[in-house]
Image (cartoon, rainbow, N blue to C red; front, side, top):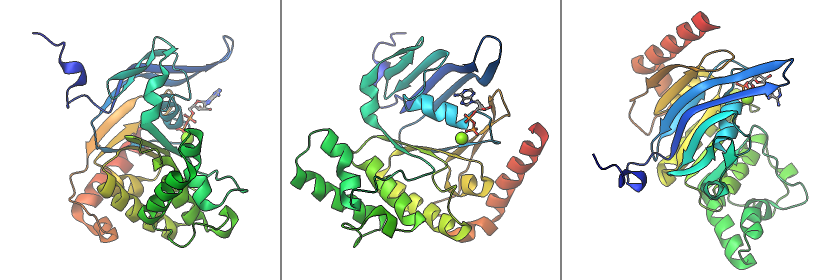
Length: 270
Ligand SMILES: Nc1ncnc2c1ncn2[C@@H]1O[C@H](COP(=O)(O)OP(=O)(O)O)[C@@H](O)[C@H]1O
Ligand SMILES: [Mg+2]
């Protein structure tokens, strides 16, 4: 079969991961963070990486984001290799936006300037980048806070600004590492709803890391459960509940069934 045309077809996964592995530490004290792992993330999917603390979720996400070099394996973004045999190919990075547990906004920049900063670094003129920042401020629901300082916003609003900043140059893929982990439970619920809405409006490919089962089941199209260190894919679960999902979905049978399955499996492997 001629496979030469497959590389850049519409079916090319947004992210393809082939035998990616990570060791940290020294020869005397090696830490096996992630066992060789294979995973494909199709375009437009909202994939959740779930697992106990220390199982390698952040390690995997940072390798996908090009921030951390794998010990071995291959990783491609939109069909372009980012890591191959420990070597890095930088072009794919333009396709990635990242959000971490802390918003990491610059305290000396207003919200609009924080959100526009990646565009400024790319050389986009002020008028254009502020217009784009204002579109994103509307998208993430913090209209009215354009000229405020980060310290004037609540934790949830700062995370909204961080999401807007990550989207500023319109990356195809959004990587989120416990983005709502520092928020109180009610704010977290409302941020989960907001993220679902943003995802439905933008249809970005999202990989979100969490150790919350309910957050995973609420948000995910598909959940990848990682085992304790060295992390390896233990179970992959589809979450076919229709969208938009309301918070009431947590009481639904389908939700409870998936959450229970994950809870039991986590107890078995932990
Ligand atoms: N820079 C590092 N040096 C040594 N060990 C590390 C380093 N970063 C992470 N680890 C170890 O790798 C494992 C996986 O870490 P991490 O990916 O942060 O887990 P998670 O995000 O799932 O909590 C942990 O045991 C952690 O201590
Ligand atoms: Mg982590």
